[in-house]
Length: 247
Ligand code: NDP
Image (cartoon, rainbow, N blue to C red):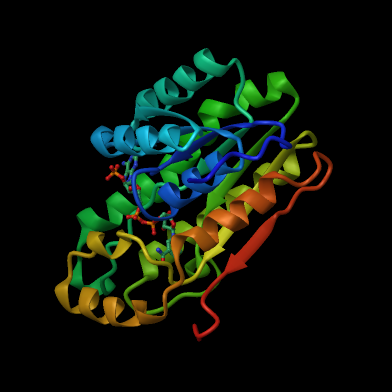
């Protein structure tokens, strides 16, 4: 059984896409460190089970349904957290999809979905928390990019475009903010359910073979914990965390 630390000042941390992979691991790690985690995703049954498990381990968790492609849903998620705790300290914009394919496969619906979840979803999250964080004169936005935000590979053109965009808008937000912290986390191959969103079966097989060297999602949760627990005047802007064996 993991006991929360008693030495930290608990933060209210909202995690999108918290039902699996990096979001789940982050929620578990932050809750074990004594923070209040607010779990958002579409599959509320998973979130409810995760919240119960965290609370069974003496952590604090609150589950709320969330579709990041719907601005009203994002506002409702953030509003529910704010109503419950009276503040929002950290938003982890983690929800993402990765239906990789070559551009000439013309899987246009999948391009739209990546833009809607990976880019618009992050923007809607920022829009929902920014007025609260401005009023608090404090807050921290953690955006999940990827090593695909630093490089481009075949089949990943659109996914990379969304992840490059997340880095660009994070840098713009950082420059506009003097009392908010902005962190970009760029994972490499990490064990999760992300390859489940790949509809092109040849691409999916190829990517799943690469996942042999993937690191556990907990490694990314640890990086996020590090970023959010620095002193208020220290803004960790970028962390790239990938398998030692990844080229
Ligand atoms: P997972 O597929 O395990 O988790 C993604 C989560 O996002 C799911 O739990 C899903 O829950 C949620 N989600 C998807 N669509 C929506 C939506 N419209 N609204 C709300 N939630 C949504 O993948 P990862 O944990 O790997 O991915 C987390 C982030 O990390 C993503 O941004 C991804 O791009 C990034 N990343 C991952 C890497 C990896 O190798 N795994 C590498 C680099 C970056 P639900 O379906 O219930 O809504």
